[in-house]
Length: 358
Image (cartoon, rainbow, N blue to C red; front, side):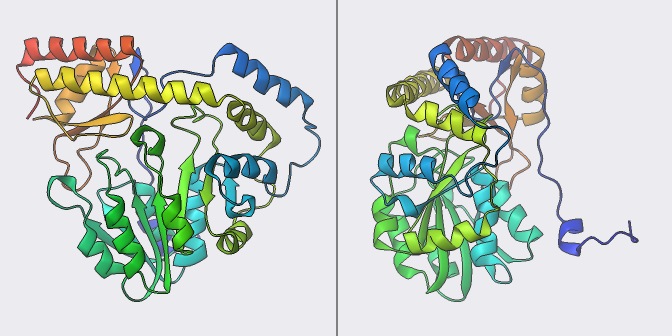
């Protein structure tokens, strides 16, 4: 290893943690429970068939950006599309945090901190408050001076609780001129939240959105940033050219042609979230009140409960390795029958081992 030319920042950062496991019911990655219906798949395939596969795609996917901008009543040149919001997170560190500072919450989506460390930013991780509350005053203090990029998921992840828009306003008002404030709205559709007014009023605020969750396109890898057009111009410089394929664009455009399907999937998921939450509450299970498409549960032994559920055909996600989340398991809201299978597995595990929750 010593003979390899690897920057110490890369060598010292652990790889992103995820272990794929086969299971009858997969509730571990916050994906949409349903694939695209047959008419939408056919529409996407027709667009793919019409694409010129031997030609490079657009330098930047301006057509899809314009469609997304119209959805948010935003200037088209203020939307930057990439191959997933993960790519945009990395690009935003390069844009504003390289050689500077990066602020992330803890616990939070681990990619913020990972990319900051890989790219050599000075990382500040701000612990969540009591009951996983957004730590407003600590974030305000972190961005009041210096320069860099701050990543603030709203709703919070992996806890799932909402962030008050007034707290984000406080941060935007307090941020010094050297800061880019990134509000990651990956679960906004399920929460019914929208912070475009904040991005409109504060040109250094960037919003991140994904087509992986509510749109059901995790496999297509598409995400986008909503920003002041002048800032979006700079962000597109950082994104690699021709990096969103014609095939990705075909799928994204087909789904945008079916807004009623998207809205119905969101309504169905929210209704199932509330039904699942009520069923767990009846069983005395502790969990964080969620406005997302997942619930974060508290159990006495996360490893044992995870193993017991998997033995009964249900895969959930362990989160007990994250700071302040001892005993945490995250369960995605699936289809009704999947959630019922999860509840039966939970009850069976309870009968065998006693109450698994903390």
